Length: 350
Image (cartoon, rainbow, N blue to C red; front, side, top):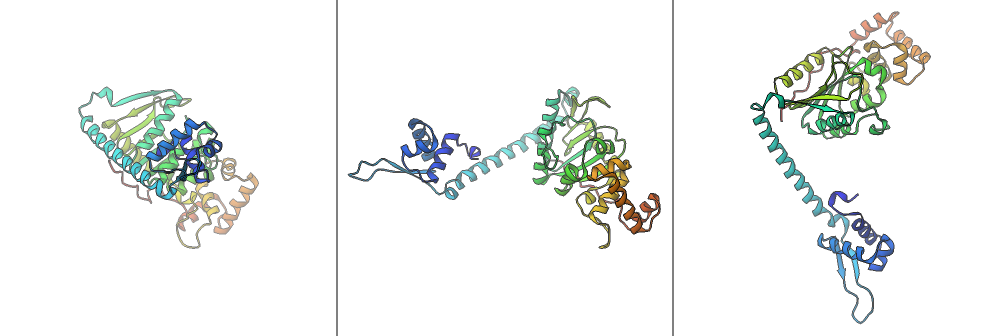
């Protein structure tokens, strides 16, 4: 756990052994399970970092030299502050380099404004890198095929990519349009999409989206190399250019047409206090996607019969005898999300 402060495994073991009460080289050897030379080298390094104090044996005694740890909350505070300052300096330098890069972008060779990324592993790395580069907002269109279908790369509880969760917690805005095909075959409302909504992702849904897309601020975009690939094994990285501006505008057009679902997925239903329950809100959001009853039941993690029972219960509550009436009455009560009702977050160029 202390690798971030540049302590190697032996140094960590020695310091933790000191914290646990070992004070001599022989005791540290036994606790850490390493030789005397490595223990002494680790102690010397810890002394240089002011993490350990050395005390000679008592006069007239034949006792061994003793070592005592500096209290952890004191010992590591200065190291943490120094590391934080180093990170801040690095970030400022990266921002300076980014500004220089953008200043030169206008004069770059057109062939340098796009690059091809080939191979599934390379595409996954590029997706992670693009998300980590964002300072304000990620915009995306999510539809099959997926390069990151490996379950080992997904959080087992939420189904989210770890990078997305990290960036959301860091305060980066996410606006994502989910294609109904992806919802039918790959995503679960209550896990990956619902978890992202809980962290603040602004999600909308749309049928027949034209392409996958990922945009970081106004600085970089990633789209598939082919319009309808069978697998996502190659992508195009688009740097600042007229093409990137078109992609950003294209996303905003689709965003205005897509159906908002985030409030419902996060269990936040708009309207009056007597509005839909969280369960009813999710059911209404699913009905608006146009998916089949079987798929909607699977999305909710319930049986088809239970889904039908909940649907008819909601229809009875609103006095509707058909699904069309249900939609009309839910809309009149403000229970249904409407495209264009939530203002898109302004994208800030950094």
